[in-house]
Length: 272
Image (cartoon, rainbow, N blue to C red; front, side, top):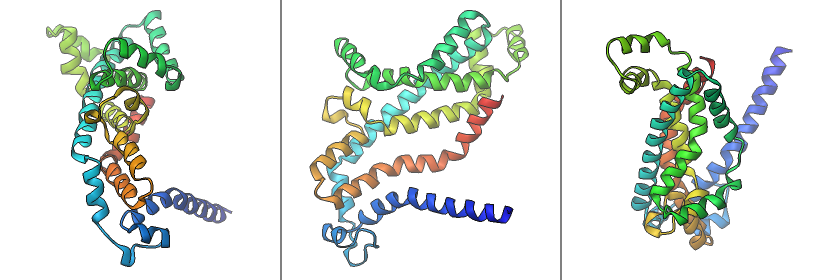
């Protein structure tokens, strides 16, 4: 019976793996074909239609260096600000045991249930009035939307840190600011890595918020460039698919390099 269950599980796993991998396979394989090669054989390998010119043209038309720099700067500044504010907020919520702190934490948790679409129009209208429809405003918006999950992750981990460590630091003459950044924050490294990875992947791939906020071509991120690129080259699938592969490479490399920290950090933050 156990053997049959293992066989069934293996078959289901293989089928699911094929379903998930097949879109990536089609995009990658067809990105190396000519337009004629794609329409003649979508599933097969490039063969005689193999070409690298698709990537050269897509790289140029995407203005990849500029859009990559925009995405990188927005992502890095957003993640750094999220880490700074949410780690301090979670620490104060844990150490300040009162009904107010409990209520604030519940508000952070409840805000995760509110969909972005419910607030995007008032948010953009307000941002336009105070002249924040630019990358700086986008960073502050990411701070607001990324706070809830980050606070929850930090909150769970900080509860495992003995309060005696902080009391010893206070006896040695540390103020609250020094206690947190010198004593507590280094202990939060596993959760900090997890928070940075999850927020980096979300911000890097985000399309809707940058489309609403960024109104100049020179500020466009990679997802925005890809949107307009597909609009321009939707009939030239060889260039469009090559551009899609170029856009995916940075975040795929980042995820593969950091994936072992994601589950580790989440488990530590939730269990402890």
